[in-house]
Image (cartoon, rainbow, N blue to C red):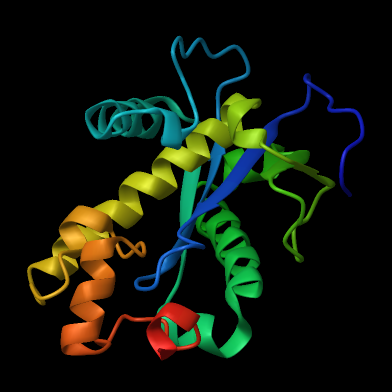
Length: 200
């Protein structure tokens, strides 16, 4: 469902994704379950944090969360099913990763809070889509940080295999540098060929 009242006493799993806008690389989602009485002073949406602060929070969340999981959908599938469906699939895969790695914590979850306006199919409990939820709900903020750090790290690693595009700087987003490299070299293996900026 979208909107509605949120039961703050419930064991909540927050889910968010990153990477809908880039021309290259995967879309990555994270699911996070925080302790019921967590105190994460200064927790913010990943976009509001510096890289250093995001990486610091990533470590804190990994150490203190009751459970977390990541879901990855790769460019070939993004091209096949479209970016919205790929984002929703990544969210579901993040939950499945969490449930597999921490089944006891997963069994206690009784509601999902999703950033945005769409809920992924296949979740076992009620889900609420919250526009701008990554600025409102701590569990979604935590998920946004985990997903952002994981995706950025992957793009930096890939840039060492193919140095032509500067992925370590723009992470696949359509910066001026990235567009110029595409003009010069054409797309590589991780470009999303269904995206207009790559097709051209």
